[in-house]
Length: 285
Image (cartoon, rainbow, N blue to C red; front, side):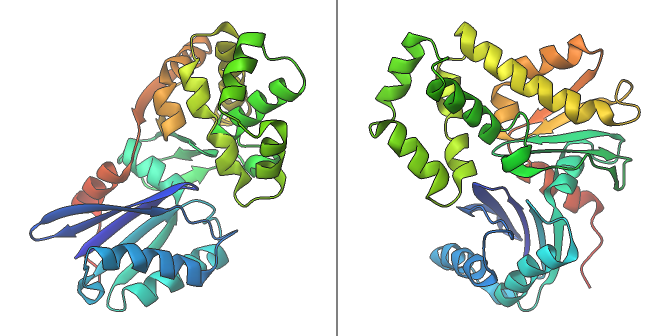
């Protein structure tokens, strides 16, 4: 059995490939900055056990995840996976490589992630050759769900939100401003909470104020990240992630205004990653 996993801050997609076919499972998202090796192991095993997966039959495990930018963080994930799959060849890679492989394949391009968080990279068809540093949701993550959520919350608290949107938003926040502050400053994963407001933005996406808010956030993402890469005017700019996918009409407008070429928009890269590994990955030792 071969497993390919794609993990964001909110959710992990697991694709299990056997001779009989494929099985897609879901767990919580894992981030080595916030989650321990034991938690990653326990939550993964819990879901796999529900489906009676024989962990000893897994021969290769390809994991792509958020915040896996150095050996120490990748190794935390890898240790949990090696415990889960004792007979498997385990590879842990950054989600940027997942974005590149699932959108560019073997062709050069710029790959972007816009989901709960955001990130970008320049891909030469084989490896990631450049990455404008991602500062995370505290300082950066322009265009992301968390960034959009912060913009909406700021407008609400600073009394900049039009009255009709204030009424609509308050219907969805029974605890009012205290509920927001508690979730942002006192509870775990405030980035995921902030990103949850993209559902509200989607519901009111035709409102002039919301359109402007989304446009400004995506424009900042493009200008501060994507336009810094050499050749950005001559190669396609691809996207993965729910926020980019559902608001792709606005992203395309911003790119075209800047003379850039929109590429593909993929909601979930897991299927493309599976095809990539079927076509290109070397057999595990």
